[in-house]
Image 1: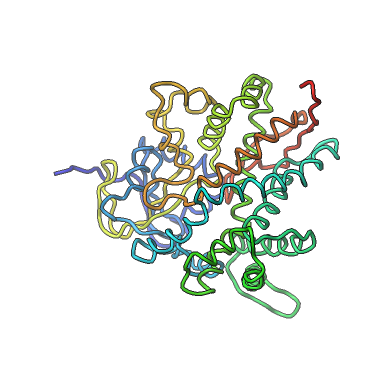
Image 2: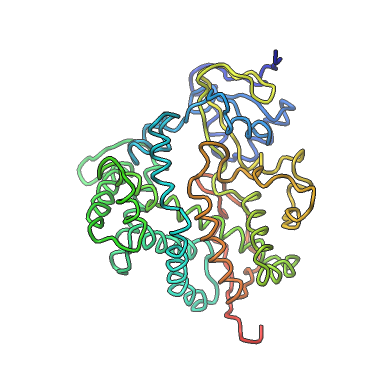
Length: 423
């Protein structure tokens, strides 16, 4: 019989005095560092969102949770009622049942090998359109430019849009919709005032209308593939397409692209940048190391359906379990010199399994689109490396913020220069 330790820490009592949500949100990495040091444990408990919550920061604990071999956990996102309202019934809100298997199978049809050429064509068109703007300014805000590029790319890839004005209109809707996730969830209209959440709900309605209007017009895009996949009705299809055309995917892509550009711009990485330009396998290792160090999302959440032992700790039934992807990706028991950017670690014969990078999840509920995202990132970075050199403006603060999406806290700028034929 497996023995288990009690999780250290305290969940206190219901109420603001015991709740640590603000403290965590204000500086999540510092919060986690302080708590793991205080309890001398990679697993600890606190009260977050007024719920008893167990934090997992070790690689083994996160792996066990995401594997969930005995189906002891359910998805914890539907508890966030505002998220469910903004997106509706999506596979990410459902627990393990026949609906999850059916929907994951349908969505998987978007990312089969037959669609790879569509992805490549859309990425190249978007790069052709946006890359020249890199040269038009003395320096550019990296994250913002990548967000413009990837938003246009996603609208073209998923909806088949190519009209500049239409893209501009829908992009504005996706931004308003996203702001609903980071605003106070109050659907309020008083006179000329409309709350951010109410505006987000209006934007959701408009976006769903656009998706439905595009259905008969769609061709050579993922909307056509989805319409043929076998969703039960147009509403189920539209709500899942809403997830792909929302700001979520462009922000994740922009986060990874920005982190990669910042790291490769450092003078001590000049040789790595040159090698990544000519060696596709090495570029793949560079991008995996970027995912390890700078995952777009800090972690995720589950709810314990029953009491269970996880990595030697007793998890009580009903507790929220927050897993910290970034911390697990830097577990020193798995990765040597975990804080260093070392793409070469993936070439070593004793390198840890690539599956220990939990950026896109792990196990039965991993990210369905992770291979597609990987192709997009590789295609954009390969073109950028082949066609441009860049350097960061001097004296900039490169501090990261981690919520809701990891990115530099300030608008980090860089100068991009078109390569000549001799370079």
